[in-house]
Image (cartoon, rainbow, N blue to C red; front, side, top):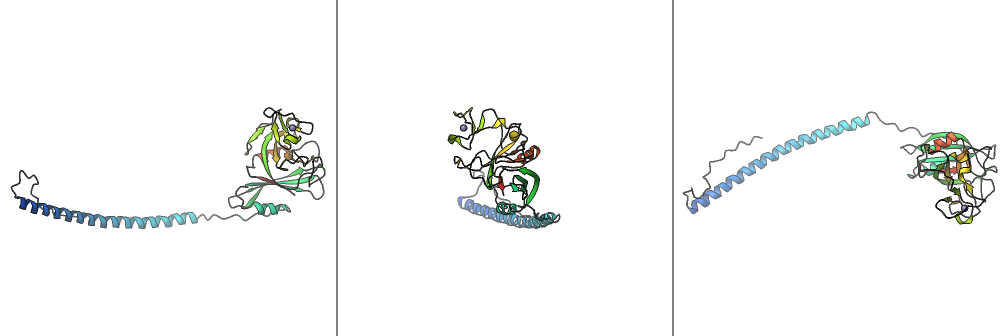
Length: 282
Ligand SMILES: [Zn+2]
């Protein structure tokens, strides 16, 4: 800062030492005030100019660095991958339906075989950050002995349509499930009685004795080694069908209405699907 200011020598302000009269004192005070104001203005001006120069330079530097940053981001030019095409029949309808739905990150598609009424293919897909679907797994599956379009309990059919998945559980320990996993205990059932129809209950906590139409979950080895609940009949309408699950293969090439896949594939599903995932059966 080049503020080379000449400050005049001022009279001492201690009035006891001053020989000035009241009038002279008043004049001196006015002079002091004038000089002080002048000095302050000069300093302020100098600071302003200095500050302006600094901020201007700083602004230019910021601009320069912004340009550099923009170039740095633009240089490795992130290429959005080309959307994959899937040979999954009507499953593409569900992919389109949930592509921009932020509550759905994974889809389990179950496509009935054209040649085998109880045979199917399961596709596990996950969305990337560009809302593009990516195939995680494709594996063989079994559905109801009498195929799709379940309407009533005991028709040995698997429901057709779009359902949520819930209640990750199994007889075996948690395989690293993304959804909260419950280890099946001896007191857990899917109730077949009117009172708690189609609901998973633990008779250790619910005062109820399940009848013969109920499923004692721990008895279903290996099917329920790992399982996810398919939210079919969410109103729990009695007789419409209950205990529809995605679970591990049993002994037969069909189910009573559930969807079955190999145990290692069921583990993969549990390690992938999060809350909001859906299962679409077609
Ligand atoms: Zn019951």
